[in-house]
Image 1 (spheres, rainbow, N blue to C red):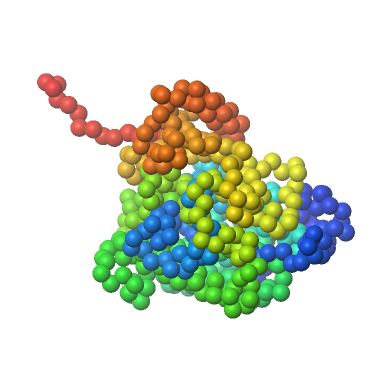
Image 2: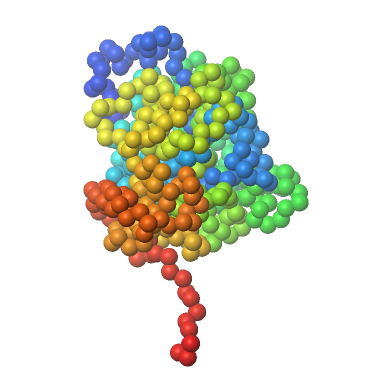
Amino acid sequence: MKHATRRDFLKTMGRGALLLGASDWLRPIWAWGDSGGRPPNFVFILADDWGWGDLGCYGHDLLKTPNLDRLAAQGTLFTQFYVNGPVCSPSRAAIMTGQFPSRHRVFAHFASPEENQKRDMPGWLDPSVVTLPRLLKERGYVTGHFGKWHLGSGRADGTDAPEPSAYGVDDYRVFVGNGPRWDVPDFNSRSSELIVDEAVRFVEANKGKPFFVNVWLKDVHAVLDPTEEQMAAYPNLKGALRVYYSAATDADRQLGRLLGKLDELGLTENTVVVFTSDNGPEDIRIGNASHSGVGSPGPFRGRKRSLYEGGIRTPFMVRWPKVTPAGKVDGATVLSGVDMLPTLCALAGVQPPKDWKLDGEDMSGACKGSPRRRKKPLMWDFRYGVVGHVLNRSPMLAIRDGDWKLLMNPDRRRVELYDIPHDPSELKDLASARPKEVQRLSDALLKWFDSLPKGKIWPEAGRADYSWPKPTEND
C-alpha cells in the first residue's frame, strides 16, 4: 500500500500547521486535548446514488436495510441533509474541502481527460487545498479511504491524477481513481464486500490509534449485477426492482459486518459513524441503469442531476454512543456536505485553518442533540441538462436560505420559490406571491454565481422542454 513520505507530509501539511507551534502539531491530538483522553474515531460511509427514500428508516416499504435501520435507531437520523451537487464528484469535493465544488471548477463528475477539458474542468481536485483527511492526519489520526474516489482522472496531456496520499490519506484502495485497485472479474456484484473487507482490515490494524476512514461504496451505482444468492432476498420480485433492491440489501449486509467489527473490537462507543449518499437516485432512462434505475427519492421531486429536492437531498445519520442521542429524528436542522469538514473537525477537537474560507458550518451541536438553524445559505450550480421526466428538470441554479428555496436560470428565467418545510415536494411555486423573497434570494444567488470560475454552460442546462403535439391550423 502506497503511503505519503515524510517529505510529502511536510510539504502538504499546509495551512493547518501555521495555527500552532511546531511542538504542538507534532504531538498526537490526544496528548493536548482538554480531557487528555483519546479523541473519537470516524467511519464515514458514503453510498453511491442512494435516494432519500431508499432505506426502511426513511419510509421504504419494500427495501430491506436492517443494519442501517439499526444504525439510525442507535443514533440520530436527519431529514434535511443536502449534498452540494446533483452528481458524484462535486458532492465528494465538497465533503473533502468544506467548500462549494464550483469554487474548484468541479462543475460535474470527472470523466475522461478530454471530456474534463471540454467541460472547463481541471483533471483533478487540486491536492494543495485543505482537506478533511489531511487536517485529521496532522493531528495524529491514521487516515484511510476504501472504495470510490472520483476526484480526478487526468489531463489531456497524459498526466495522471494524484493518488489519495496527496490529499492526506495514509492507506487506501480505490476505483475510479489512481492507486491500488481491485482486479477481480465480479467486482460489480462484490464491490461492497470487497470495500468493507479493506475497511475491516484498516480498523483492525489501527484499533489502538485514533483513525478516520472513508468507506465510499460503489453500490447502488449502475451497472448492478447481483448474484442469484443476493437476489434470493427478493424471491417475489422481478426485473429492475429485484436487481436494485438486491444490490442495496447486500450493501447493507456488508456494512453490518463493519459495524459488527467495531463492536467486536470494543470501538463502538468511541467511534462516530456517519452514513449518507452522494446524490439522489439514478434515472432509469440512463443506459447503464435501464435494468435497475428504480431508486426512491422519497416524497420529493427530482432525481440524480436535478436541483429539486430528490436530486440533492439524501439520507444522513450519525451514531456516537453517549454523545449523539439514540432514536432521535431531527427534522429541523438543515445540514450539508460542506458542513462535514468543520463538523467532524469540531468533534475531533481540531481547528480548521482560519484563512480557509469555509462554505460549511460547524454543526456538531446538532450531532450532539441540539437542532440549530444554519447561518449561511446553501447554493448550487449545475451547468448541464437534467435527464428524465420533465417534472425533474430543474433550473440551473438554486439557493436554500432558512425555509425558502429558490431555483432560477442565470438569465432570471424559470424563477421558482418554495417553502420547503411546508412544501417539501416543491409543488406550489410561490414566486409571484413573494416578490421580496425572490428579489433577495435571486440577488444573492446571482452574486455568488458571478463570483465562480467561468465555465461552459451546456445548451440543455436549466431547460424543461417537452415535445407537445402541435395543434392543427383549424384548432
